Image (cartoon, rainbow, N blue to C red; front, side):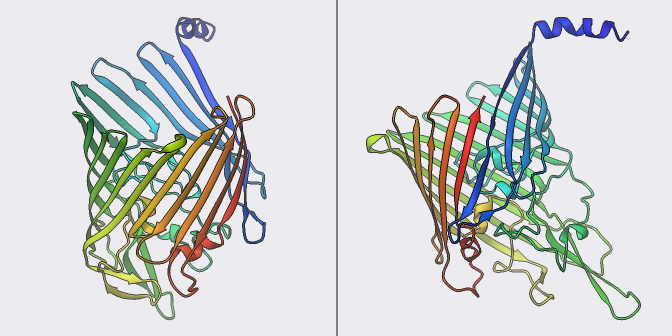
Length: 427
């Protein structure tokens, strides 16, 4: 039987098509302040392998990660899923990254796949984590309907004990990962419908799942013999999200808009000494405009907003370790676009151009906090001297408000101002 098995596979292999693509991408970051290395993991190898047979695809996406200061190579299977293309649309099953939304980089409706915070400042699916899920996409006239089922909750991959990363969480005195309670009903559901009206694409979506960030949900007091020990229990609140996005073309101007309404609640039913019955509602939105400027320069502006509509219940003040009322000032969203945590109102501006028969690409960008002092200035250059080879250079400068005692996140990012150097070979 073992000898017959390769013979049975031969017809499949002869009628199948195998595709692959990827890159080898050594890179590094250096601080602007003193030129020292910023030692963080990066994806040295990134590869996609696909197998097509009739109406079926098998798609895989994996990466090899390492860091220069500790050159140990870690293999990461980012995606591995089966796709079937029936007459009505598309069916996908397996570990996959699902992306929703119409705007660039910042998407309030894009909450199905969690974020890897090591790659927070990257773009697209490079920031995302694949999760086991099933998806059905149906095409009907000018309509598309996508239904998603995610049986297991996937949290954001946060950064712990990384002195070179500005938003790293220290575990010297408290490791939150040891106090996260499992979700009793982790099943998550989503549906998105897209329609074309004139020169506009409009989408409506709904997602019911649990937060990607953990929150303080309850306290226990246990006597260890002498005194009382307080145990802080963490978990992921249940959140419902109603979203909408639009893409429209007005002459040479491309307009993109996206908004999402979030309703979150602590749905844990645990026998804690104190359970925080927290509830909150908030909205996030992005307005984006793109315009082809002179000299083949592409211009893009994006206004990003985050508004807490209401919040009530109790929470724990981590500074004083006291129970306080939950309100709009101390509530932190557990799901949504990550850039909303930098500022409630912000502006992202970019300008890009290509030169020398598109062998040189240059992009300048700025991210500005509109409510308090703080901004980022960035510049990247990508030069391809020969086919498949790219030399990359970038710089990102963060500026805070100059007050070391304030909680302005741009103050934390100042020391992360860096120069990026990379060499990329694509195949």
